[in-house]
Image (cartoon, rainbow, N blue to C red; front, side, top):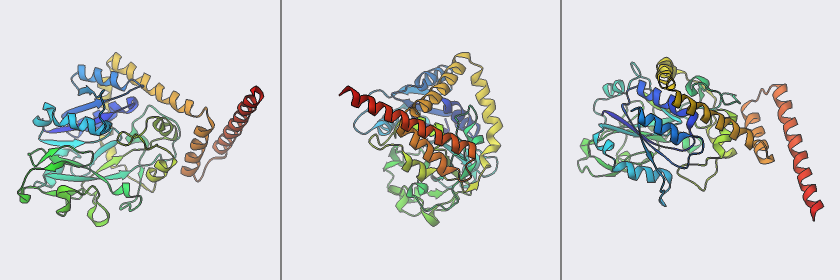
Length: 356
């Protein structure tokens, strides 16, 4: 196995097949996926994909105090697939490796930087592009606007994920970068950014940001679709963060990640190959049913979030923040929704007072 991607998933059913098909199209030939606490059928989808020989699925049921992602990473360190892979990358299902050089294949990236042993692939933050509904369509097709590069604030926009050579230089996996260096000869470790430029010695052991001049996206980056549409985001707020269970996905999260400054459609050259890969798997009736059921769960989850006033307010704010040219019919609909919500909220309070 040349390229192994490792990830942890919870409630990602509508997005799994695209993520897998895309990364297969650029050369990933191994997927080790951990799942936990799924309500939308993600775990059942992964079981089916495992049975079809597409991935290896491990249920991450017993979470340690380290949290979901770190529990998965510690278990992945001991999995035989890790030892068999030449290159490793830990990435979430909303993160797509976008190789911009030559044919867009991971092999093309290695050819462009033959001496590199670790690629710090910078996040390119993609926004919701004014989209509201959850659609059964490719994420990469729907969302093609992102932050200008370089994006200095917030600091999360300077974070990276690491594609690194599994040559024994590092003992442990990490969320953003490999951990616990065991190679003493520093000359054998060559970190480069997404433009192929060498990175300083601080990257060998610690750094998790490519801030300012250290950043680069000319050869490759990570397209980070962390918000998607407004209603997809509502469904995501119910899940929480995988590595910070105490931190909410809320308006602050939306503001920090919803950038729609410039168009970047470079990843779309893999759109047809991705659709072809998905079509092959969707021909399996069981997998197709699970995909559609998962999609419906997310739509229902978003609508349920809109049943209370807090959810309505969040939805109205994220839509109005995104669409400065908000169409009158949409603005009117949001206004009416909030009025009805307040009336319902008041009626409930009055009813409670009447019972006392």
